[in-house]
Image 1 (cartoon, rainbow, N blue to C red):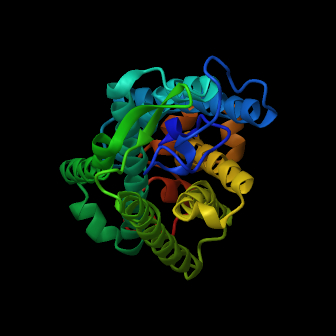
Image 2: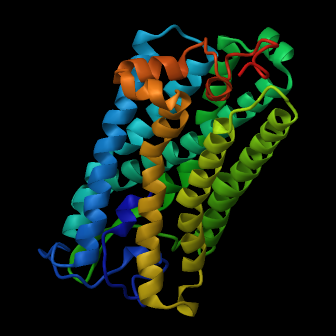
Length: 345
């Protein structure tokens, strides 16, 4: 996530040339944004997201990676948690840049931090798609899934997802640069040698990082819902609530970010204050997805009453375990693929 673009409050469109809206400012050297209420609010939210995401995903990594048997399902959760954990681990750098409204970490970290954050953004999104497709296949074709879903194949899918995410993060390595603007150092995308780069990259990130994944997720969960509704034994409404929450969260977290990034391509057509605020809020919402993932994909898999009575470790082990009597657990654990799974309440 390109959080390091977000540390300037006021913007000047004239220079430097070929930079994006959120990279140019008028803040004086040595000043911080702590005197601005909106800035303090956004920083506070980011700190909370960092704490929840860092420790929440760390807990998922510990349980799924070291305390549980390796399965297809735990492979998905472990990979997703690693992606979100790495993203959260770099948030303190972004928070520092937001507070100081200046980039103090040098050119190498400018390139590295941005590329790593985009790597984790895309890997997280791709893994959400993989989980959705896997659940859909397990519900629609339980016998086939039981015979063909293996740990080795799941590992290959995870590797391919990360390789594609690496490809999508390469532009940050190429175009990120540092420069001086009105007396302070900024980390920005330098498209001087490629004037159309900003538009091409923004559009490709929208299509590959939101539109296509969202279509896949909607399609998969629509099939699952239709399959369950046709199942007369499925009386619980919890599976539908969980799936609705998953789709709504993905949409709300990522759509504002991409909308304002695309609006930034023609920033002269929009109100400056609205656009700059929208960019910051969009970044925060996208960042929040990193700590919501373990909540939605792990903790919501348990029955609510039992969750309140169990310890944190029991919650996660039950949610990601291979056995479970409820259909809601079945939906949150695509590894339960026997022929009874789609009908057992």
